[in-house]
Structure formats: C-alpha cells, structure tokens
Figure (cartoon, rainbow, N blue to C red):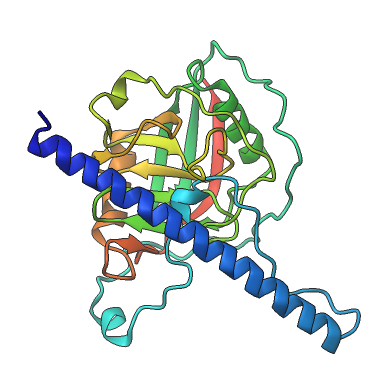
Length: 274
C-alpha cells in the first residue's frame, strides 16, 4: 500500500518532470524564434555578426532554465528581502567550449575539494572522487580554465524541491561546456528513500541519460528527486550557512521556482587536491 508520504514524494517528482518538459518546449520555441530574428538581421545588416545566440543545452541544464525570462512585477520587487550578497568581482565570463570530454587525469584515489568563492560567501565542497571520477575530473578541468568564474547561479527552487542551480555561463539555463559526461554514483547510499539530502551537490541534466555538462545544483533542504542526477560532492557546514542565507532571500517569481533574489555570482571556482 502506498503511504501518504510516498504519494507526496511521487507527486513532487511528477510535478518536477512536468516542469522539465515545459522548459524544454519553451527553449525549443526560443531557439526557433531566435533563428528567425538572426536571419532577419542578416538581411537588414549585411555582414553583421549575430548579437544573440542560444547555448547548447547539455545538462539540467534541465533542471535548468529557471527564470531567466521572468521579470518581477514592481510590487514584487519592492517587497522582496534585501540582497544579502556583495557586488561581484570585476571580470568577464569565459565563452570557450570543447568538443570532447577531457581525458581523466585526476588521481582517483586522492581527495579533492572545490571552493566556490561567491558574492554571498565561500561554499566549500568535499568531492566524491572515487565514486564520480569523470564528474570530478570535468570540474577540475573547467575550474582550471576559469569556466565558472563570474557566472551567476541562475535558479532557486523553494517549493517541491529545494536547490540552488549554478554552472551556466549564459545565466539562462541553456549553457554548457560543449561536451557531456556520463552519469555516475547513482546508487550512492545517501540517496535512499527517493530523496537528495541537504548538503548534496549533484549534476543537472536534460532528463536523459549521460547528458551532464557544467550545470550543477546544491541542495539546501532534502528534496524528493529520482536517483538520476550524479551526486558528486558534499557541502561543508559553513557552506550550508551561505546556501541557507541565499535560500532565505527567496526567488524572483514568488511561485517557488525562479532566479534567486540574492545576487549569487561565483567570483572564483577552485578545485584542489588534498
């Protein structure tokens, strides 16, 4: 017999999957619209370079496209909590992408940590190297290239699931490194009970297997999700305080899923072998 709690988790998962499907359809429409706009501009301004392109979606990038297109109403903007974060450091977002996943060069038997120096405070993460070597290796590679530096954490969910999503250089939920990595560690013991516990760092994806890229999410409260998002790190106690501060500021739509009200920018991401 299905318990009330099991039914609640099932409904939450179904709601989440419906959200993914709607976002995927919306992105497809946006790409088609942008293609038409680019064509018109090409006719009007010969030799001009397109000013807007859509990134290739390579993750959850889907849990992803949160609320990049949402503009809060004047009343919502006026009533939201003060921004608890500092101004971003000066610098530009890198736009380089790669066609293939980098060769695995990390020491699988060693311990690695990742520090996200954000505008809201430092978030330290212990990485699960041996359990998710491709994922940790990819983050080590991308961090060394400055891929995450100056990027916004573009999505905060405050209903059903409780995560902050980051890692997209476009800031709209559609970007990635140009390559995908395999799913890993989906039988992690922490995922028992159909829930990702608070403190988990996991890969976002398109809802299909092996579609992780650069987008990832940080869980600030246990979230009912299917075990299909690679868990590859655990947030430190001090990092959780920063994450909870961000979550407390809420999101822009007032509907439980949108851009965070806090200005969360990763000034610098660093992966270190310990």
